[in-house]
Length: 178
Image (cartoon, rainbow, N blue to C red; front, side, top):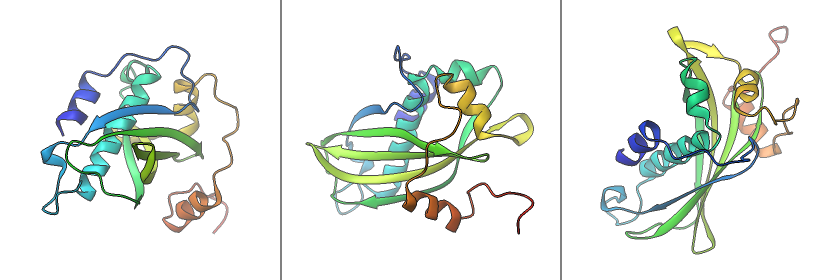
């Protein structure tokens, strides 16, 4: 929680030339509070680490300054995680965050945990932005603000991510269709 508060209230400096579709890397270390009784990182701690990495991604784009004036803020609509190996106390690891694509409702993000050059876990997040009065901000509006260099059309989502979004009903659907 301390790392998330720090990343949000005292964000790191923007990365010159960072594009919306460029990966953002957050380096961390496993602390005692991240562990469960089996002495590996608790599954809930991974989600908080992902929050920190997404905050850093926004900071890399100078996004807090851009959304702050509008009083927009990010929320998670859905997430899923696959674990490959266990992170242990003291391990230094990286979370690489990148945008996979977006639709009218949400932005789809991949977050990959690596340690010592090996894959430890992969998470997918369907994220949204809300504004004053819990107003839902269309994802293309967020993309246009955060990434003026972003393509006019979203990249095609990987098949597994598109199927996940449809299964959880977070994907945009044409209001004219049932």
